Image: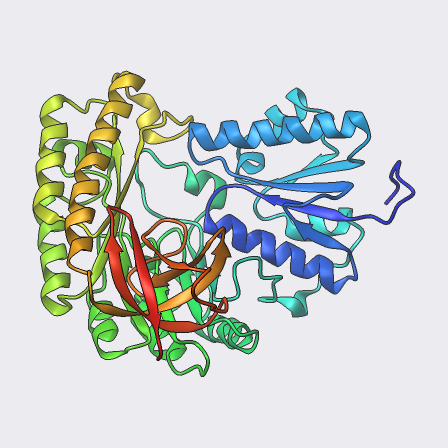
Length: 435
C-alpha cells in the first residue's frame, strides 16, 4: 500500500451505529492484527476505516459528517487513506462515490475479504470468530445471526444486511469459549432478530437450544439477550431462562407501537392484545424478569388518538427499561410510499413525553432497590466513580450503579455485591460489600 507518509502505517477503525457494527469492526481488526498490522479503534492513524450506520436519518448524518471530517484530515495531510464500509456504504455506495470521491474506496456489509485485501492483508478463513475485543473486559457482544426476513414497513435493515442467516450452534459455542478464555464474564447475544435464530438452517427456532449449550461453558457467568422480535417468540426461551442462573433475567424485545392501526401499517404481524398477552405470559413464567422495549413516534398516519393509545399502554405495562426514537422516512422501505405527515416537532414532543413517562416509572421501580444488595459487574472507572451494572442492566442503554472510587477500589471485569444507597430515575449509587 503506497501512502504519502513515511511513518509506519497505523489503521484507525472508527465504528458508528449499533453493537452489531461494533462486532463487525472487531472481526476486521482481528484479521488485521493477525496480519501483523498496527490497528487501533477510534484513536489516531494515518489510514482510516469508517464502519458506517445507515439505519435512520440521524445515523446517516453522523456517518456522513465523520467521513467529511476525515476528508478534511486527509487534505491537511494528517490522514493518507480513507476507506468506508458498513451499512451506509452498502446502501448508498454509488451516491457516496459521486459525492465524496476523496474516499479511496467504499465497501458493503459483506465485503470484508475485499476490504482486508485493500489494506494489504490476507483474509484468514481459519480466524472465523476471532476478534479484537474493544469493549471493557467484563463483557463482549456475540452475533448469532445476520440479516432479517421480517417485512417491517419502516426498516431498511434487509436492504443493507440481506436475508436472515443463522450461524451454527457449534460456531457460536466455539466463539463463546474463546471469549471465556480471554476473561470475558458476560456475553450479550445480538442479532437483527434473535427470535428467528435457527429456523433457516435447523428448520425450527433454536434459541433455547443455543442457550442450553452456552451455559455449559466455564468462565461465562452472564448471558444476555438483545433484539428479540415479538411475533412468534419462542416462550420456551423464558423457561430455560428460569432454569439457568447464568442467563440474565433480561429481555430486549422491540415492540414499536401499541395502536392496532399503526401496528398493521408497520407490518408487525401483531396486535396490542397479542403483545399484552405475550408480556403477561413472560412475566407469569418469570416474575422477576426485566423487559426492555423500544417504540417509534410519529409514524405516518399516527394521530393523537394513536399516541394516546401508546401512552396508556406504556403506563399499563410499566416496562422496566424503555427507549424511543422518532420515525425516519427511509427510501426503498414499504412505508416510504406513505406520506410522512407528522411534523418533526410533533414527533419529538411525543418522544419526549414518552420518555418523561418512562422516567417516572423507572424512578418508582428504582426506589424499590434502596437498601437491597445486588450482584454487579464492574465495567470501568469514569471520573470519580466505578461504573457497574446489575444483571438487569445492559451496557450503555440501561441503569448504571455508580460506586465512589475515592472510597473503594474495584477492578474492571470483577463481580461485587453492592448495596444500593441512592436511587434516581436512571442511575443508582451503591456501596460494595464482600462477596
